[in-house]
Amino acid sequence: MNNNYLFDKYLKLIGVEADAPSYKLLCRIEKAQLIKIPFENISKLLIKKQERNNLPSFAEFLYGIEKYNFGGTCNANNYYLHLLLEHPGFDIKLCGADMKNSDVHLISIVNIDGKEYITNGDYAVLFN
Image 1 (cartoon, rainbow, N blue to C red):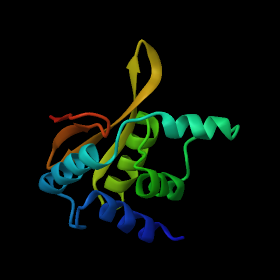
Image 2 (image 1 turned 45 degrees about the vertical axis):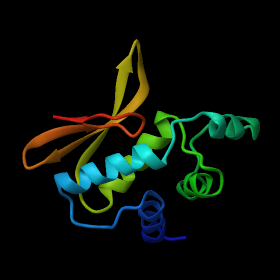
Image 3 (image 1 turned 45 degrees about the horizontal axis):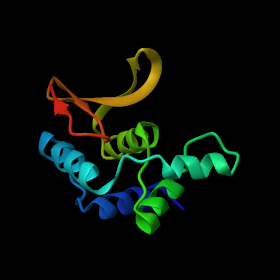
């Protein structure tokens, strides 16, 4: 499966049409992500049961959303949100956030017109 197909599928699953990078598109994607992709750990437990200790592949992540209404923890949700935003050309960096222990939470910082926005696909956060 090629990545363009997967990105198109991701956008379709969250109900957002592809467009040029903008603050407006960032807000649409962030809102749709929060509504359609749940923060949950059932999918992570299933991966561990298969004796895997990693993120699902991009295709597995989207299949879980489509078939079982899965999402993931911050690692999967924010990593794949980061890829989704990077794909059309957003100026974005993936960051491990420090919450008592380093790198236990992922976020992204998006730069639009010289302003930085923190985006988090687990709960409503989009501020500069």
